[in-house]
Length: 52
Image (cartoon, rainbow, N blue to C red; front, side, top):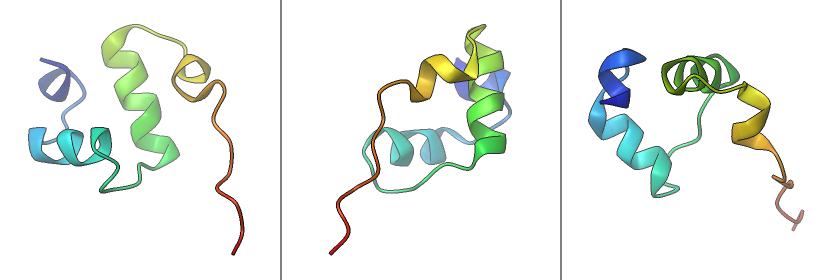
């Protein structure tokens, strides 16, 4: 399981997946390493939300 390999709690991972929490750059790197991916792959194509 990804959360075990990156040492993050499963609830936290689920909240990130559902958009309920934001993830720090540090944790993006941890998740990418657990998935054996370049961290840039996880953020490719992301855009800032429109300012209101």
